Length: 159
Image (cartoon, rainbow, N blue to C red):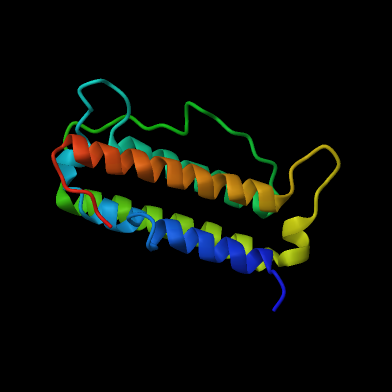
């Protein structure tokens, strides 16, 4: 069997979100976070879990647009949302579901490109494969932050 970039991308995305034996899945981490913890600001400052999730959502949406041929324009200010004062169970569940839908749309867009288009590299630009890889790393990085924030709240690590 030969290497398929699309298959590799799909597996890597699943390992970050659904899980693998190296670390907790982002989905499990998010599902274990109660709404009040999602909006709690760490004592040393930094972003809340709610803000991190919206940042990941914006990132996935932006890269999906790029994969589909629309010129991307990263807007750092738009990539972060204002933390709400309160958050109900239903609102938090909807936010997690919206993120799951957004990342599934991104995953589908990457896989539907096909191996050849994914690897195509325009002059002086990154291939779509590299852009997708960077987003996967970005998601794993923020998943680690979310796991750490859970520990700051006194919660056990998930595996």
